Length: 420
Image (cartoon, rainbow, N blue to C red; front, side, top):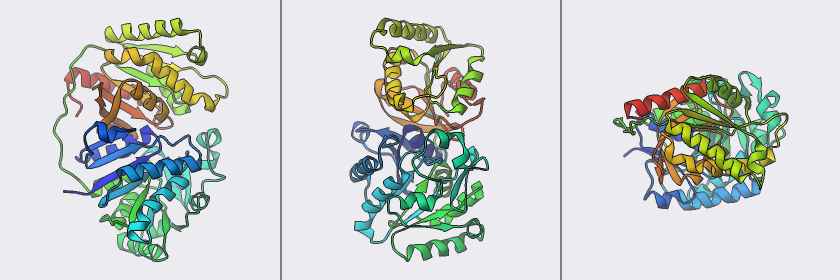
């Protein structure tokens, strides 16, 4: 039997885009949240857990991760701490929880960190995050939301008392043995995180090779880029086709993310033949007296799905959005769409908060991961009360054509009757 992995993420789309890396290499992988481990009757070789901590304070995120690790981590399971590639949330505090979980068993602990995800333009040079070659601090995503004064990873980790050292690109590219020696040297100093530069898939492959085989006192910190490198280095057996119903019903696409990438992709998707666009104003979701109007919108969505139309539901946000309303809007939107779930041939959701709210309302307690539509855009099958194909995507990932590609993939699935 190959290595078993526990991935702990702070949101649903992040949990999925890491687990899918292993599923693509033939290893059974699933995503879960809440009490899903009990509900689904055991864990697959790769289990990715959404701790739902993206919007928490550092203290609360640490507490949440302590509880998750106490419940799910067992001796002999490799640990991967999934962090946002643009450092949203509380990655420093959550890293502390991993040290706390491993230190009593193994003494000093080494974390190998590389948040780079080259396929989506995220890279790391001199221990700092860049997006499409631009320093993270100068990007839209940082201006909209950030937790730290800057994107220097050593300084970020220091905010939670974690000691880290940078491993420069020159050392990464000197080869596996040179990098392994550098990692061993850092580990010899006690609890440390080795912050590894990476700009290409080859860089990440070298980092994975230098850290493998899995050791009980070593854990990994990164995004889906590093997960893919580790998965390729620990291949499983290929799986056969996964069946899905052949149906004439449409798919439901929900855009709740405020990121520019998702909004641009929604505009392109709205022009696709056979698709109905249903824009929703935030005021309609927040109003306590608009129940009849919300029910009417849900009826429109159901009618379109039954007629074989794919439906795009998008929260319309103008000007500078109030991020504090995000959780409430996601919950209200999920309430509105719950009656439509039984009529959808497939589901796509952008933004981890949106996806988590929808799936909770739809009675879904996990996702069996199958494939990627694009890098960072995961395809799977829902587990629980509803069993349909699902695509999840982080809000800031993808091109203008990503949602169009997602709908085209969901159309192919319902016509051919198989996910992969």
